[in-house]
Image (cartoon, rainbow over all chains, first blue to last red):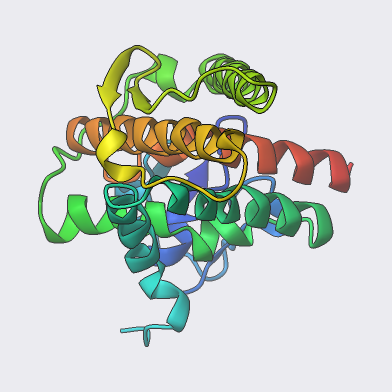
Length: 61
Length: 189
């Protein structure tokens, strides 16, 4: 099973990933960085492609 | 598909803003909305709703990069993504902003109005054709020239990185984005 992982140290919280996630699995609570809801994420990779900083990776878990 | 909301069309506002500066420089003052709104949202609500939803400039880069296919969609170099670069750029940007405010002050104090738009903090473009006088102090016009220079320069940088890297690469080093994130982090800690 694949899931998206955000490198939170480098995340700006711009929200580009949030816009493309069809499952609404991403949120940016408190404007700090993006958080992926693992229960909703299917690892499709849309957010990873979209992220301008390219800091979201899709990993097998 | 998600239904489009009113705020998905804010890229029109950003485009119109840039165009208006070619006709009457005093419209540059409207750009303050893009400075005050994100700061107010982060200070009051403590989130980055501005970046996430309302930023017309980000939408514009998205549109140009995705729909118009102007972006190479390559990864940004790692150093550009690092906090050192982001915070460094923030400091540089606001230092230059301070210089601009100082020049505005000088005109308020009696110095001569310079009818130029400075691109990339270096190239002085004659812009007198977009100035038709003001009933107020000339300092008001000087701020407009200076502020429009800031907006045009950052748009240009954003377009260059949109083409070279991913569409919204500007978001990674956008000084407002860095600052609102800083405010949010301080607020939530």
